[in-house]
Image 1 (cartoon, rainbow, N blue to C red):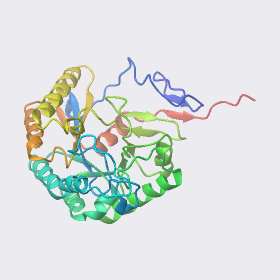
Image 2 (cartoon, one colour):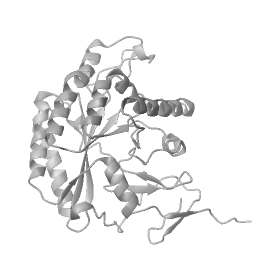
Image 3 (cartoon, rainbow, N blue to C red):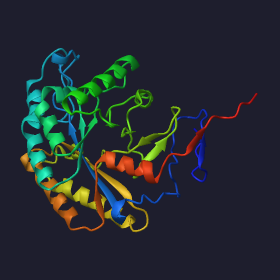
Image 4 (tube, helix red, strand yellow):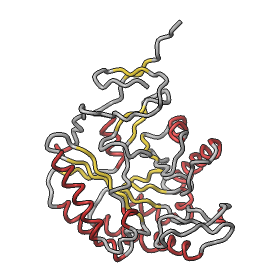
Length: 319
C-alpha cells in the first residue's frame, strides 16, 4: 500500500509489504484521556496447558521460556520437568498475579491461549469477574510459522468458540505470538477482531491497509517483558528496566505522548522471587500523575475514535 500521512486517503497497490517508515517525523498526538503523558498497558500471557506436548499430538515436548536454560525438545516423549514448570504458572503464578493486580485495580489484557482456557476455566472466569479484557493468544501456544492456512484458520475459529463458551464473549483482540506471513490476512478475513498485536514496530498504534480494509495494530513488546528476565533470578533488574523505559517515554510525553506495554507470564514473574520487581514498578507508577492505565481494547477504541483510518480507494486502472 502507498501511504501518505499528509493525505486523508490511501491507495491500495502492490508493494514490498513492509513499512520501515511509519510515522517518521509526523508522530501524531495520541490525545490520551485525562491529558495523560503516557498510556501504560499490562498484558498477562495465559499459556499454560497450550504449549507443545505429545499428549496434544505434537511432535515433541516444549522447549521455550522455562527455568531450564536451553532445554531441548524431547521428540516423541514427555518432558515431565517442563510440564510441571508450566503447571506452576496456572496452579500458583496466575492466582498470585490475579490477587496482586486486582487489589491494585490495574486494568489488564490477558493473552489467553484457547486450549489453556479449556483446561482451567476457573482462571477464565476470574479474568471476567475482574473486568479484564481477554484477547486471543491463538488456540495453541505453538509456532505457526509452518502451519498451513487451513489449520491456522481453524485454530482461530476454535479459540473464538472457546472464548464464547468460557469468557462469554468472543475476543476482540488477538496476539498469535508466533505468526507467519499470512496470519494477519487470516485475522482480517475473519472480520471480528478490532485489533491485533503481532507487531513490535512502534510506540503507538497504527493502521494497516494491506488486506482490503483498514486494520488496527497495537504493537506489543518483547523488551518490557518478563521473558527476558526469566534467568535473572530476581526482580530488581525487571523493575529497573521497566522504570527506565517508563521514565524515557514519560519525558517524551511532554511533547508527544506514547504507549508502554508490559508483558507478564504466570510461570515467570508469578514466581515469589520475581514478583517483587513488578510490585515495585506498580508502586512507582502510583507516584506519577497523568498516566493512563488501560486495557488494549480501551486503547483500540480510543484510536478508532481519535485517529480513524484513512479513506481507502482502489488504484486507478492503467488501461
